[in-house]
Length: 225
Image (cartoon, rainbow, N blue to C red; front, top):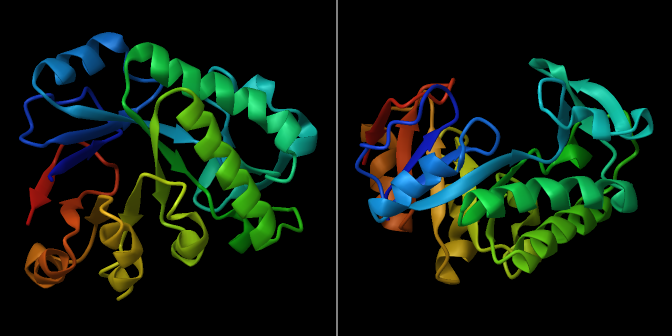
């Protein structure tokens, strides 16, 4: 299975890929419909671990759940994933927007806050509970959901997530950790930024990963294995 991951610029619907992963806010139902007409599946990118100030619903996050600025993203702050009752309706609404636009699945980004300097004393158990809530919200709406990175959480969550999205497992020599998804018959959508395809594609083929090389801004450019 091949994929395209484009979060920047107007989506190039002519790319030869089976699955497209595109932004929830920047794309309307017509883009999803155009991709469906070409026989594609479409994943809805949603930032769930951070509050991005440019998003239309950023005001829905109380100050009490907003933590430290995410390194490298000055307009984004970590959320306190322990506050499930506060966060659930926000993400339920976001996922419903994806559903209403016709998306097939969710890419939930930033689901490893417990490993970061979030400003909150988060445990792995806190993160797992939050990630399970996300899976439930997606499934209640008939949407699949992918586990983004979070390799240490795969043993606990592979049964509840429908696919994986990974960045740079080849660069850090950890692609084998994604095997539980493949062994369960679930896709792994993998991207590298700096490693040439000649270096990572043999491993990707062996592990049956769906791998591409992307530019960091995630425009339409891509190289395939």
